[in-house]
Length: 129
Length: 247
Image (cartoon, rainbow over all chains, first blue to last red; front, side, top):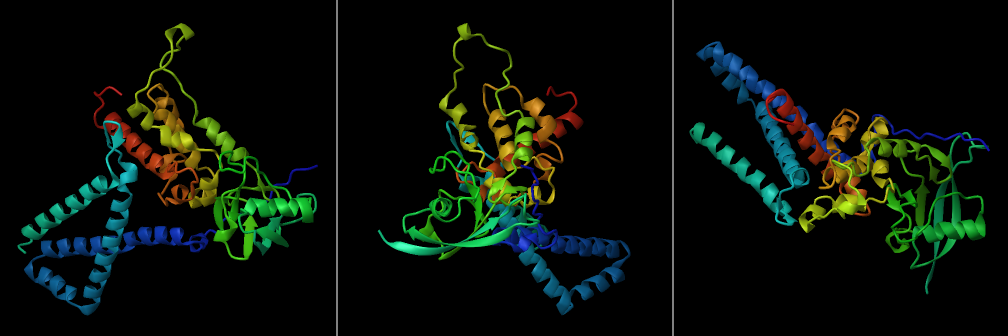
């Protein structure tokens, strides 16, 4: 009797279409593209700021374009999805043992939400809103 | 007891005859209380004695009967027919080479499991006269969950990282490394880090989380891996930014 194991490889590009949990994972990972582009826009704005008032004003005017507003809404949506999915899994990575038991998942995730809200408030305050 | 006719599509592969696996369909008269393993046993006993598959305990303890059932890695002894439609597709575990029919090759997993040193490495050897190792309930709780692994390998079948990059140590072996790292009787973490804190260890994991979703014993390997990532990150900072700190 001879051994001749048969290898079934995952399709390299379409494996994630196989089930819902892979699709949710890819959705979470794909958010980085929008966050990356948003960061590039922000850096470009800083560069325009260094080039003087007129250049910066031109950048601000460009941001008012409907397509730019649409992009920022999309980026906000994806960033929120990223944050919520990551905060949801933080209790897996951080386990705090108090006495015999571990702190409930809600406490660890809740601390992240509290930090998120606190930092957002500071940013909004600094932006003068 | 009510009877139900189930069409069982089983992926068959005979290494001596077949170039590639093919589905074969069996019509099985099932009892409503049966699990998928009962239906496969019926095929073996009454329809086709050449069918090969692994099973033993029938009670989700031995970890032998893992299969892809309708695309999901599950223990076939725990897959109740009442939860499935009348047509059920049974395949060997994904991400493993097929030895024959539903039997997969486990060599890679066993080799990786061995590499993470899944046993207690004591600080110093104790003699019998020293008595037993004592542990508090709190110390036990730190690792008990990870010790529930039955090596069924459903987590490997669910993990796309393992499927795409075969060198990944994988969920169960890493969870077991964590199990021993967390044990107060163990002092082998530094040795295990040589395997665990590498690009084939925890850093190959991109946290899909599928391993924990399919685990029949609620071991939560994804949690173990993320905790080890944090541990090895702290090690790195201590080594590179705080060289004066004792490791």
